[in-house]
Length: 197
Image (cartoon, rainbow, N blue to C red; front, top):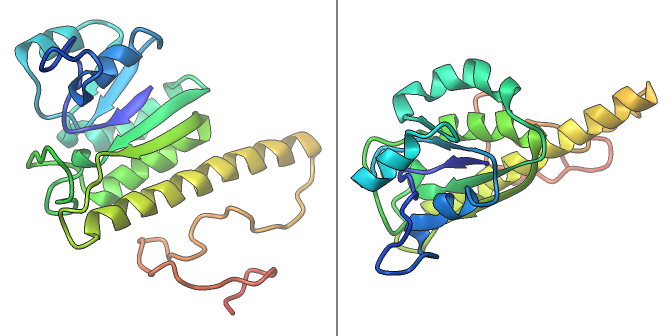
């Protein structure tokens, strides 16, 4: 599992609840072989002790770019990707329950999603609330779209490599509604030939 989160979420129990949001990664490790927690910057001493075991890799915000340079190729296939929106710096995502400063930028989270999605079988965005003016929900929605496009592109590339030819379709291509630096509002309508209506 790869998770983007400000918190380790490795508590065994929180407020006497083993299913609390502060225990999610701990529960996942009862089923999964390992967890990579990207963007973590806070946790209890119990959580940091648990994170020191071999089945947990913690990637602090400052180390995420270096992780992106090499680590995604070493990940197993068929993993799950979870984005807790509080992994983002609160200046970008104020609509969440447990804000932690000094977080990831949207561009960095998008890079993680794009790098991991081709190996993922599932994805979620969690802990988005309506505390702000929609800014956080918009970020969550854009990250969901990035996952779908990146995951579909991986499937399409694999299918084309097995078939030996492509059909020229632009289905799932990255950047349809955005240029390379991520600008664009994503509201363009596309007809079947990939041009804007």
